Amino acid sequence: MNDPQPVTFWGEFSKKLVTNTFFNVLGRSWSFLVSLLLTPYILSHLNVGDFGAWVLFTIFTYSFSLLDLGLGSSFVKYISEYHTHEDYDRVSKVIFSGLAFYSLFGVLLTIVGLLIEQPLLQLFRIANASHVYFLVLLTCAITNIGAMFLSVFKGIQRMDKSNSIEIRMSVVTVLGTIIFLEAGLGMFGLALNALVNAVLALILTVFTVKRVVPKVSLGWNFDAKLLREMFAYGAKISVSRVGGLICFQADKLIVSRVLGLAAVSFYEVSSRLTSFMRAVPLVMLSALIPATSELGARNDREKILRTYLLVSKYVAMVTVAMVAFLVLEAGSVVRLWLGKTFDQSAFLVQILAIGYGVNVLGGAASQTGAGVGRPEFDMRSTILLSIVNPVMSLLLVQEFGAPGAAAGTSLALIVAAIYLLVTFHRNYTETSVWTVLRDIHARPILSGIVAGLAVVGFHHIVPGVPALAGVRYLIPIKLAADFAIFLPGYIVLLVAFRQVSVIDWNNFVWLIAFGSDFLRHPFRERVKIYR
Image (cartoon, rainbow, N blue to C red; front, side, top):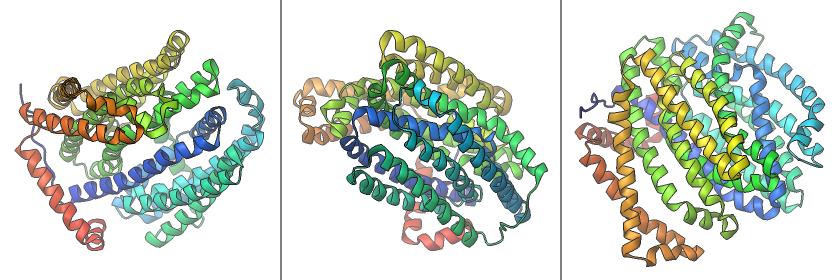
């Protein structure tokens, strides 16, 4: 078996990429920790029907934002390219043109949303929620504008600022959730809290943009031609966003329509837990679009390919480990999180974890393609996903209930990820996808399976360990014992299969040294990296 071409970190570009990834990990970890802790609290104040309805309202919010014709998807790329050449006039035009569009878009969204209110709520069996629905429309309109300004920091690769804003606003969200639910406002309180936070986030983001990038002007800078270019690029990306909606949210809509709102609550719990798992490797990919956009603007194809291989390799090792361990421990994790009431969600977690994991393995190709202005790779795989997923979920949910919907989603994700990798390698890297599947993906997968079997064998030898899952407060001991078997075995197997080499060890040492220096002198290092 041939080894893949060695890839390593290099220079100031790597420092910026790693630093941005660090801040993304910090921000997303905090966000998901908050969601993890808030979920049982919200469930204690809402019945399963109301919680299911609230899940659907959050889906509506995301769905309505996709009606912007793809404009929101283009801000990071265009701002990144213009900022690379210090063309702040063009950056200002991007921002103002977007602001003009989203102001009009918000008004139209609210009007059209109110016109379709009754048929939409009836379709998904949501009753007596008109007041909540109106607040959701207003929140969506304001959130779109706030997200546009937040993309300025992502475009100039200041993930420290974007994540700082998101973390501060998450604290406000938590406080608001507690206040409104303790006041007995229920689902209406959650909607009101979301609206208040959207307004505060917009104000904070605009203020921070003016302070961090003073050369950006919010005066009249409308550029219709530039807006058309952004729409042309964003339209391709928006197909991926719609596909993401269909893949990660449409199954809940199908469950609601076929099985009712209560079933949505149990399905959402499994989806939320697997989303936590998926989020960790995804943040390793989140800095790729602005990074590869910068390299693309400099015509540095060699570094783009090296970045792609490096990120693919490390994302694969992390993703497979998390999927394997979550599949093993799904029952224990769900019971620890929410108690025995939601035990039936564990099987759904196992099914979704596999599909979500395979989806992440294709993430480096998706993000690299978008960053170099070739979003059509992801667009085509998403179209395939958008067709296969609802068809499979609808067919299987009729026969197998919620597990059928989960299986349909996972199968669709696997098919789409394979197609994405094949087309990306054939048309961009001009190499065989087989080499990546063999040298980057196959070894971690085999290592994860064997390490998982080692844990199963450990349970047979020491039956008292799995018995700990019967007592909720003892579950952390079981998880720790299983992890102590799984992780060392997984790492040893990676070394034995030559997935981890001296090059990777040098990368790790460099990362630790850089991270240690960064944590000791965070302000000095940020100035050096972001100057």
